[in-house]
Each structure stands twice: as structure tokens, then as C-alpha cells.
Image 1 (cartoon, rainbow, N blue to C red):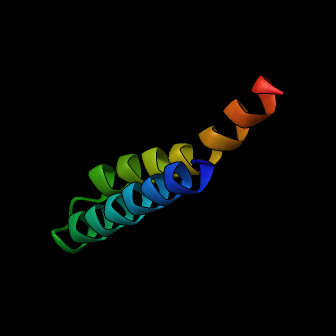
Image 2: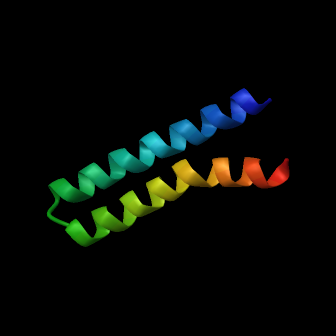
Length: 54
């Protein structure tokens, strides 16, 4: 079950990074940075939640 949740999170992270790259190509640097911060939060948040549940 945890494997599937992490797989879904991985797909969301990859999609978010792809969206940030497309924003960067359209010269929307502020939007790209904001989306990258969101992607970074998606990377860190599962580990914080998992450690707090133990």
C-alpha cells in the first residue's frame, strides 16, 4: 500500500516539475519558481508525515 502511495506522489512530482519547466520556457520565472517550491514541498512532506506517525 505504501508503495502505491509513493508511486502516486512520484507521478505528481514529475508532472509538477514538467509544468515548472514549461512555465520557464514561456518566460514566466516567478510562476516557475513557485511551482518548484511546491514540488520541493511534495518531496519533503511525505517524509515529515511518516516520521510523525511513528
